[in-house]
Image 1 (cartoon, rainbow, N blue to C red):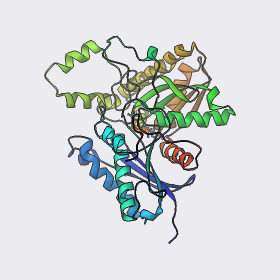
Image 2 (cartoon, rainbow, N blue to C red):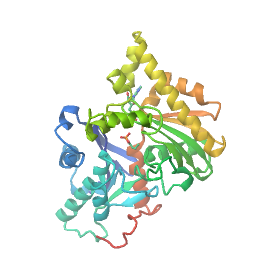
Image 3 (cartoon, rainbow, N blue to C red):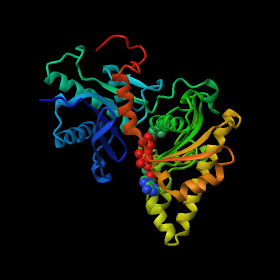
Image 4 (cartoon, helix red, strand yellow):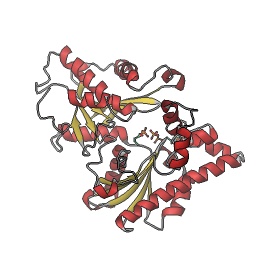
Length: 374
Ligand SMILES: Nc1ncnc2c1ncn2[C@@H]1O[C@H](COP(=O)(O)OP(=O)(O)O)[C@@H](O)[C@H]1O
Ligand SMILES: CCCC(=O)OP(=O)(O)O
């Protein structure tokens, strides 16, 4: 039988698990397995979803008739395992442990675990040892924590024991920066972009030379379709101690049930736009507030480079909305020209990153302190 040499891409998100296979740069097939709120309600933690999410990926492979022989590598979206460099990491037992014990609950933490387990099972089935040259390996590319070690100046907050977290949409922000540099005919190293990732969660990122220098995270700045953004810490503290919510419930109010969801009971911008078209004034007000806050976050990052910004890039699912991007453009264009690269490029970015590793154009790192093979 002819081997297909596919890169399996695994990207678990809050409401779905995306899986795809690429042959070199060509997408062979893909599937977004949606997980309804009812289905996910049965799990009390993200780690508990591991087998369920893994089965989603395995069923995608089965349904497309893909077997162990067909896979050349596995590319996984990574979560938070401590501050990492951008680029590729080989998943080993230490990476799996760190993902399982991540301080930040996010479905992306499950991806390297799933990838590692699938690779292990395939190797066992094919009689390959993990060290053999043809062993199937799982990799992470541009994880949520892949901003590199931030400059101290950018990590300081008003409370010494709370450092600013450098957790963001690294994968998509870097992918669109690479695309923008290509369009401009520039070397990535020479660019300075502000990338606003406009998804279910919004982050605004300043990338200098393709690396994240500073950012406004999804729990710091404006609110998002389903996240609260930054809040008055005084009032938030009061609410936390009011006795009305457990810590888990409070976290869910901030991330999942916050933002548009809290005000309008919906997180889909298309639905919000429909409401506005029907004359819903509350929906119009809340959306305008979200746009204003995002614009303020974009402009605030201009201060980091004293206004020297080549481009502002609007990306993510909500960048498909011309109404939203026009309103944002109007507020931020005084700082730098605005380009829209709508949608997310996470699956391609994962596959292409690992393809560069397989071709020897990039090296995969290991978690700091990991020198030995498993
Ligand atoms: N064609 C579209 N027009 C307007 N909004 C859209 C469109 N497609 C997706 N969205 C919005 O994009 C958001 C999700 O963005 P996406 O980047 O896919 O999410 P995530 O970062 O959560 O994976 C949702 O609020 C959705 O309503
Ligand atoms: C901001 C950290 C990454 C993140 O939250 O990703 P999603 O918006 O895809 O959940």
